[in-house]
Amino acid sequence: MKSRYLGWKSIPIPVMVFILTACTGEIRPSDNTKKEAVKVDAVSSTSSGQNTTDVEIRPAVKDVELLTSKGNQSLTATLQHGKGFSLYVFENFTFNEATGRLSLSSNPEYYVDIESLPSEDDLAQLEVAGEEELSQIGEVFNYSGELVEHPLGFADLYLQTSGEGGISDYIVWKSESGAAFLFRLHNPKGVEASDFAGPILVSLSTVQSE
Image (cartoon, rainbow, N blue to C red; front, side, top):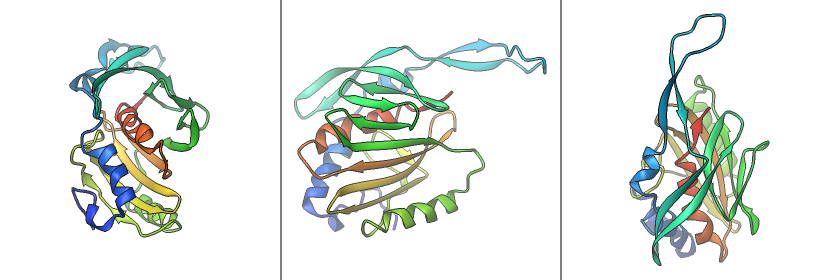
């Protein structure tokens, strides 16, 4: 079932509280987040004589303004590099370059695994794989398409389920350049859920290929 509002009527109240925190405007990136990259021309030095390409230069440190329940707050994010991609990571989070896992430093049970996808990956096959994976936890809901008031804005595939262990998401998302990524997100139930949800989604919206 496809819904722009993440099926709140069918989700238990504790889960709905988390989704409201993550997706309805308590925390969102400023307009500057989407304009972070500065493009410069670079000529390939390979012997094949490739044409001039655009290389994106991103600042090593960036201040991101977030709208929270306490008002506007400016948080510092540092550029981190994974396998074939980069993203901005906030102070209270830890990124593992080798595994592509971004987690809450105070509790690594709150995490998202980031994977760069080949351009030829079949979305239908990814959907089947995601449904099989999440069905082990509970009923799977499909929220693919436009994501209202959500930092990611749009997802080619957005599967979500919830259970005693919290909320799990399986998301296929494309950056502005068209590069595709798979996000496996796990948000346990607990007092740290809101501290994790908003900043992690903003970080994911800054993922770019390298």
